[in-house]
Length: 89
Image 1: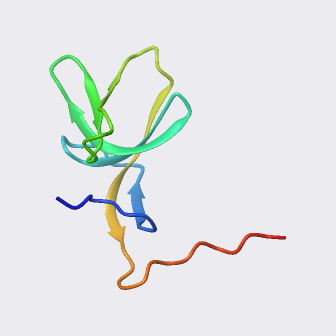
Image 2: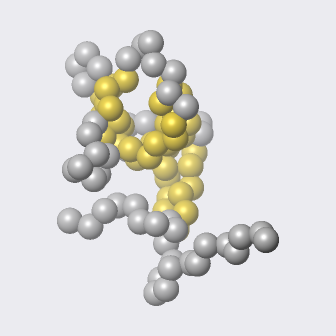
C-alpha cells in the first residue's frame, strides 16, 4: 500500500477540530512535530504512523504534548515533485 503522505505534500490543518479515531493529526510530543493517525484506546491515546517501521506512540500525561490540529485536506503536485528552494550563499 502506498503511503498516505509523500514528500512535498502540502497539508491543510484545522486547529479547531477535535480528532475522530483514524484522523490524521499534527501533534507535538516532547518538542517534536509529528504527523500521525489519532487512535484512542480504552485507557490510552496512541499516535500511529502509516509507515509500519515507525512504531505507535502512546501518550502519557507526563509527556510534553499538544494536539496541534487535524489534517483536513492534502495538496499534491502532479508529475514532477516541487524542487526545494535554493539555499542562500
